[in-house]
Amino acid sequence: MNTLPITVSGFTVLPVTYQKSTHIIYARPHAVSKSAKSKNRNLPDGRTLFLVNVPPDASEREISLLFKSCGTVERVVFDHSPEEELRNEESDSDSEVAEEDVEIQDAEGQPEEQPRKKRKVSKEKQPKAPTVTPLSTTQLRTLRNTGGCAHVIFLDSSALDKAISGPIKPKSWPTSEEPRGLTHYMALHDSCRPPLDTVRAHADSAIELYDYEQAKNKQQAAYRKGEAVVDEDGFTLVTRGGAYGQTLGGGVGVANKKFQETGKMNNRKKKEGKEKESFYAFQKAEKQRKAIVDIKKNWEADKARIEKLKESRKYKPY
Image (cartoon, rainbow, N blue to C red; front, side):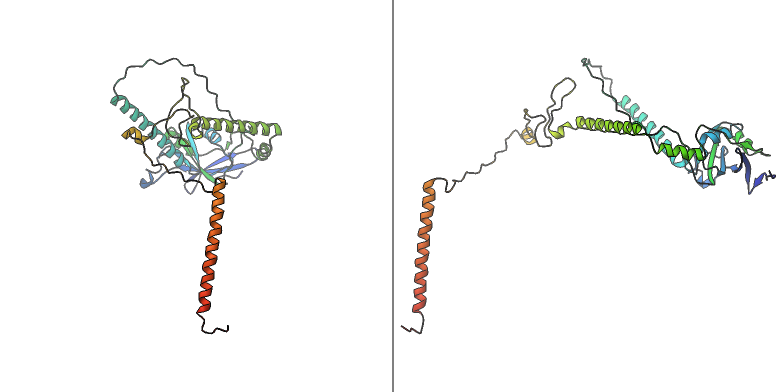
């Protein structure tokens, strides 16, 4: 192998040997400007090693083993993605601190209450949520873009100096149980085509989980369907309202808010019932007789009107 330079454009050359090939990784200490220090608090200055041209199938464990001789590796971050992870960690830690403060304030503000005697109630063990059977249990490595970068964060700054101190001897790439190369794609092909028994077990477990969630939601929202809600002691819970404006389960009435506030009933005037027409036989006969009389009256009126029009004519042939 030809002699490799120690540094290239400020990067230290780190040769890594595979079985039949050699891969070159470029490394330098990670440094940020003063204005960006507040944004990159997850990449501490003085303990972070910046790597370029990282193998696309490299894992965090393999990189940690590669620099194990230099010092303890705290964590490895690929492709400048740690900021979001650490922001989530910081938000989680802040929320935990806030919850602890609230609990302390509540404990200080509330007076000490005497413990109440609780009745012993036989509680049935709630069934655990079923777990979905995975289609494949093979662990595959994550493939990234070629020529990617990574940040290696050490626990001590002295480990960073050892990692970039020359001359650098070629190191063999650590081995792992995860398949690599063509074996990786063969394992991926097999994991995407599981046997029918595994597919059936996965589908059955997914349906069981769905039924469990539906039953749980139905139990929590039983009042929406007019079902009676029973507490732990076996008593029916009486509440006002519901999906149909009735008390849960039926059979128990609860006064409305207006009656509870004023104590007066809502006096509404009832509509007077109208007598039905043509209900009896004599009503039908009278209705028909009246219709015939109206027709005769209208005929006589029309006849008189026509005679009057005839008399008003100027020309009378006869």
